[in-house]
Image (cartoon, rainbow over the protein chains, first blue to last red):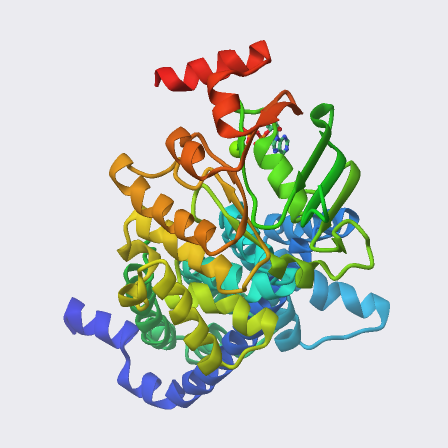
Amino acid sequence: MSTWDRFVETFFNAKVMLKYYPDILSGVVVTIELAVLIIVSGLLAGLALALLRALGIRPLNWLIIFVVDLFRSLPPLVIIVLIYFGLPAADISPSGFVSTWLSLAFVLMAFSEEIFWAGITSIPRGQWEASRSTGLSFGQTLINVILPQAFRLTIPPLTNRTIAITKGTALGTVVAVSEILGQASSAMSNSYNPSPLMMGAAAYVVLFLPVVVAARWIETRFAWKR
Amino acid sequence: MVDPIVAARGIHKHFGHLHVLKGVDLEVAERELVFVIGPSGSGKSTLLRCLNRLEEPSAGSVVVDGIDMLDPRTDINHARQRIGMVFQSFNLYPHMTALGNVTLALRKVVGKSRAEADALGMAALERVGLADRAGHTPGQLSGGQQQRVAIARAIALEPRVMLFDEPTSALDPELVGSVLEVMRDLRQSGMTMIVVSHEMGFARNAADRVVFMDHGLIVEQGPPAAIFESPTQERTRAFIGQIQRH
Ligand SMILES: Nc1ncnc2c1ncn2[C@@H]1O[C@H](COP(=O)(O)OP(=O)(O)O)[C@@H](O)[C@H]1O
Ligand SMILES: [Mg+2]
């Protein structure tokens, strides 16, 4: 057997791949479910916090800043482990799936709040004043004048951050979530062969490469033109 | 003054330790054009902004068209429809067309349908000579055109009073004329106007009264000829001399 054959036999073993590709596929489904949940809940919560912060209620803003900074400074894996192994002490036992979802949603909430907030505050004060001087309320100004401009500015950083955090779904293996990496590594230990891992890596590329390419496109598309 | 349409009395404004307005009284009659001049930092913008409560006066009273602007029971968003404001930096909404800028408050505050708002908005753009630019965004307009759209945005709400805060200061000299012309038309139509500006030529032939402010107080006021040619106060004389040298 040549070196090349041995290489293929080891990393791209057809028999192993055939046997385990359904597992990898089910992992893909779990990863997609997790990703969608994280993105939707994380971005909505981040936007909600940024809007609350715009109200300018001092003590509330301190609380928001504290929570946001906390989740931005903790490694996501630590949050996952804390929720999964820590909460049962308080008689709540979230599954690995729920722990991973909540943890990464909190992290995305924290980062997206900062991005939304930066977008809102980057809109010149004159925009608020022009709108308020014509009789629009605070809320009407926020919705019709400020947010449409702020969103344009936030889309590129938001896309990048969302991709980075969503890739963190792989951390779910630590708490036994059978997403792509979890499926791949258990298949690897069952088959004594790393081919499933290669399939897993391929699955991540297939999932995320289009998103990364789309992000690049969005970035040029939404570059702010005045 | 018989029934002033704007009556600001004893206005004080503090920003932290900074005492910016130190008891300003300003009454403006209907159809009057009052010109406010004074050195940078003397409180002109702050005074204008106190009139529509963009700035909350620390003390004093502001009554516009019979509405007590500082009464907490006053619906300030409703009251602001009667007071149009035009800013030095135009402050048009960059994500909307000229018509979108003019119709936003008509739809959201006055409650007009889109069709009604569009008709009123086009009429307002017509008045400032920009009906043919209705579909342009601010980025596609010159500074002078942007400021005229901003004026249209304010007059579309049919205000009783218009406030202008250095409307031509950000414009290239060759674009100033078109904005002043719109203001002159507005004046001719009988609009009450309070104008902060250093356009002395415009003041001379359009203003009924010139008010000179310094250090948060009205130092002197009177007809343009009197203020420009024979001011009684030394500070006024110094200031007039200064801007005429430019
Ligand atoms: N929002 C603010 N916070 C603190 N200081 C302000 C604020 N607005 C204006 N000022 C100060 O008040 C003074 C008067 O400002 P302003 O009314 O803009 O003067 P003018 O329009 O005559 O140039 C200046 O010293 C300015 O720095
Ligand atoms: Mg000013």
